[in-house]
Amino acid sequence: MLFDLRSRRRRGAVRVIYLFLAVVMVAGLVLVGVGTGSNNGGLLNAFTNGSSGSGQNDAVTSEVGAALKAIKKHPDSASDWAALVAARWSAAGTGSDYNSTTDEYTSSGKKQLRYAAQDWTKYLTLAGDKPNLTTSILAARIYQNLSQWAPASTAWEYAATAEPAPAVDALNPYFCMALNSYAAKLTDKGDLASAEVTKLAPKAKKLTLQTTLKSAKSSATTAQESVVEEC
Image 1 (cartoon, rainbow, N blue to C red):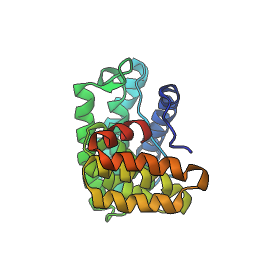
Image 2 (cartoon, helix red, strand yellow):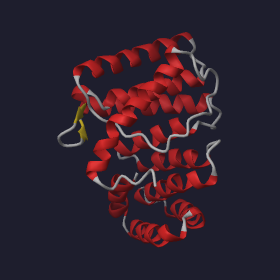
Image 3 (cartoon, helix red, strand yellow):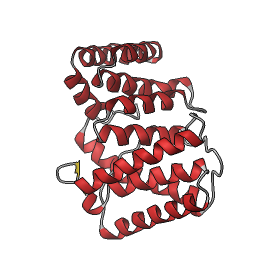
Image 4 (cartoon, rainbow, N blue to C red):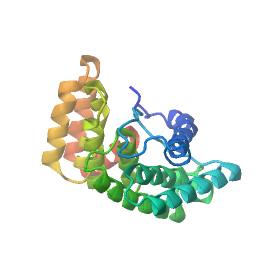
């Protein structure tokens, strides 16, 4: 399961990979011009942020600048706003914005995440509430790192229903949607997502997922802890 990041070592190993993919997304959307208009591509199952050296920090800062220039020139371009979301996410995980030792964002990193959340809202409007899978996952992770569980749940819902993701790929987004819903004490919404998990989960994983969801439903604190571990 591509979302299985329970191991702290495994989460650390994929940080650099997905940071690179986020930067590639920005480069494709802004610098190369790929995905003009409403971009519905991107079959990534997860994005995990991470810190790096000053060289990469400068590169990411440059990506944010390029994305800002693009939206200034094309303020109604959904793909340019999606690129800015990705650039902000990357920036939040580099240099002084992220403490790799404690695995936590600094105050400046959280400021970047808040900017990214605002950019997501603008992108969502321009995309006609039909965001692509990649940006939906980024938004979900952004909100989770801001401990904003309700909007994170909504972003995961967008990810679960995004095209062209096949039904099997919707399992993990629905699972994270349920956990975030319970974390936000949105029990009915969590139950709806849990029902989808039960339908989509393979037999070998069904009991484990149901047990996790049952515990999350019983306690918002437990749900929040599960979000950190599972999503």
